[in-house]
Length: 437
Image (tube, rainbow, N blue to C red; front, side, top):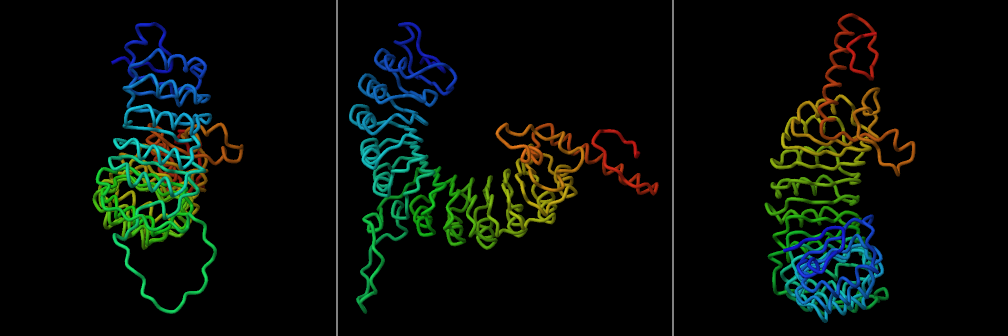
């Protein structure tokens, strides 16, 4: 099975035998005008990745759909010139696809519904960055795409709880009583009935609903009820979620391994305690910008046996006590992000890098203690797009630099002890010398 990466077939022989065409590098020099003819000549393609051809047009996709009867998967991530026209042709001409990645391709509900109803064998579906997609088409995904293992719908601002399965299984008539007060005017999307499904999404393992700001606790409860075997759940940027949503997530129990709740400001220690005590197989937890959390949340998460990644960026109530506890009780920790946690000192970070032998990445950007003389030379280079002030406080230590930082801080601690023993004022050094002056 011939696989061609970041170039087009160059001979007739290659065109006959190529099965997988992968163009991910946008700098490889391949443009849409060269890809379109190849879709006609390469008639045995099984998978096509065109995320590196950002000017991909509808014409190319139409040729692909008409000339390749064996196609199984297609990646058009970031192809902003692809429209509903070619997606509808894809739905009409191709056999049932197994995976489809359309993040950044702006689609309407008609196309999304057609995909869900026509491709029942879909295992992976990516529909991130969809400003026009509403609950109407997403309901069809839940209803018809029953073999999905991965579903990503991040940054789709129109999605509401009505797009998700309802936690209730039957509709019960409301008791008749006094006439209710007039409600505020509703749109037709607000009047959609609850999505009551008779089946369970037993295959769904990865779900991403990040930055869907209209979702609430009720929608999360419905997800957990309908997909009880989720391993990875991303809900970053959903500001309406509270501890009730976290308690619903806790029902996933031992199945849940990765959870992202960044930018969910209403979450408190109560929800994290429930999560840590129920989902004991968690490996990665992202709680960045959850400003109400305190050391108690870290104490609970630190007790998890398999946790290897924690993110507490800009959680201002964290103190050294949390870092000491984390260092002493979490030997499995590999990656820790503590940027802009103002109460953390260099002393606790020193204890952390010295105790956690598996730690390979530590982010401490904006932490006052990390600005100490000599510490910055062990940091990774800052990204080029940062302004000078941001570059000056950037501190990210990875790989060998973590061990080098630990060795440097050990040396400085020894120098301090020697200075105190000799009653000499301690002066911090930025080099590796042991001299006290």
